[in-house]
Amino acid sequence: MNESISNLWSIPLFIIIPILTAIALNIMYNRKKAISVTAVASSFALVVISALSPFGFHWFTGHPAVLPTGGYTYRADLLGWRLSLEYYYGPLQQIAIFLASLLLLFVVMISIKSLKKNIGPYISLLFLTFMSSAIVIMVNDFYHMWIGVEIGSLIVAGVVLASGEAVSQKAALKYTFFSALSGAGLAIALALILGVTGYSNISDAIKAMPLSNGSLASILYVAFGFTVLSWVYAGGLAPIHPLKADVYGASFPHATVLLQAQSKLMLVAIGLLLLRVFGTLPFAKEVMLSISVLTMMLGVVMAMLQTDFRWTLAYLIVSHSGLVTLGISLGTVQGIIGGLFQAINDVVYMSVLLLACEGVYYFGRGTSIKSVSGIAKRAPWLAIAAILGAFAASGVPPFNGFQSEIILIQASLNYGMPELAIVVLMVSVTTFIALFKGIYNIFLRPDDALNNNEKTGTPVPKILYACLAALIFITVLFGVYPQLAINFLTEAALKVVYIPWVP
Image 1 (cartoon, rainbow, N blue to C red):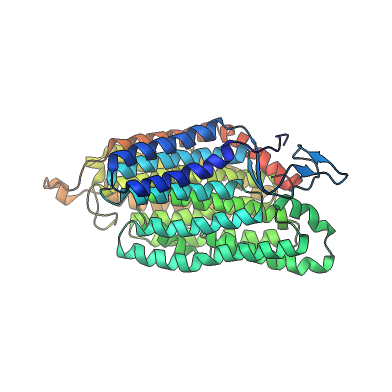
Image 2 (cartoon, rainbow, N blue to C red):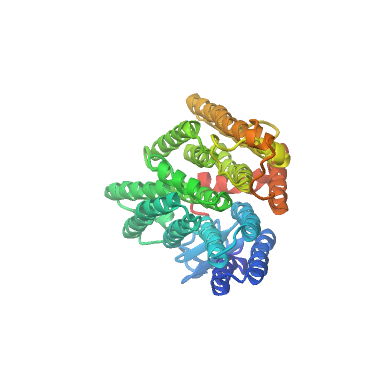
């Protein structure tokens, strides 16, 4: 909280590098060697920058905070008026963007290996997906939050269409149409907050709200409602969860790795915004909790009914989004830490499962549990990765999912709502059942064609195994030493609860 308010050099690079890379890759189009070098170098640069960058601010059309008594302050924790469009890079942003950039690097390398045509435009979309994630997790003003969500929604449609299947075209069309409501919701909320407080900077708006006339409370409720609408559509929460599940299921599994990371970061960013700005409104947390519980239960029930492993994962991603928002919606320090940790963990172990699903593609018979079987005999390491990913997603120790779910259960009990702890346990158990139903049929069930020495598909690329090994290592690392991640998340939780005007 003592960072200098300065135009931090690294923050613009998280936006500029993806944009310039996307432009360059589009110009290169199908020149694979040039695309490979440029894309890998750019994504690796983002990983390095996110790891080495100091903490601080970057502002637009503004200046250091103005003190009520006159003069300026460089202390972020003092009650000054920021009067600016502002980005912040702190511990939460560092771990989130580092993880997103690492996933971008993995997905880019896998894309280069697996795609044969239109590789430049496709990888361009992946970089822009990362960019939208970086924007929403760093912003401290309503205007750039709206821009980030709008960009993210449009890019998702392009990534889905790239898979070239009929189902992807249908999913992209539906998502493009309905996701417009997400950006519109934030735009209306921005207009209302600007009208009530006179500020678009989130910190300024929070400080100005107690000064507003009590008769304007109804306007704040309307702004809260439109922000919740954006939260639901951006993150794929109930009741529009089927739209988001279609997006996940219709994309290449490696692309879904980035799409689900983008959704989790949007859920975190908008969820923290809701707490910071509207957390003191009566019934605000109750509304958020209701949506979270509904998402968890509907998602996992739908996952149990699927006969395609891709769609099983798609609905589990949706269900576990509810776990993330459950912790944030509690509004306590422990709950927020649990929700943020769950978001980090969920992105990692779902990436393991999605890349294992990507590996199944190389055997040429899709991901339906009815038509694919016996993969473990030909790719035992792929089967092991899928099983370990399932353990992590189901909250089995010593993997990372166990640690975040324990925190959520404890936070629910301490909040005085043991029924929420029961729902978390139910989601954990049903996740295990849904995943192992698919894993048994695809990897462990005997394959008659394989017994007759019929071989199909191509070998799984070694780069896929390398990415899986790195992600599994992270699941175990955070499972054994959860404090490594929690140290990055605690400050954000404390700020939201005790000093919400500080980003």
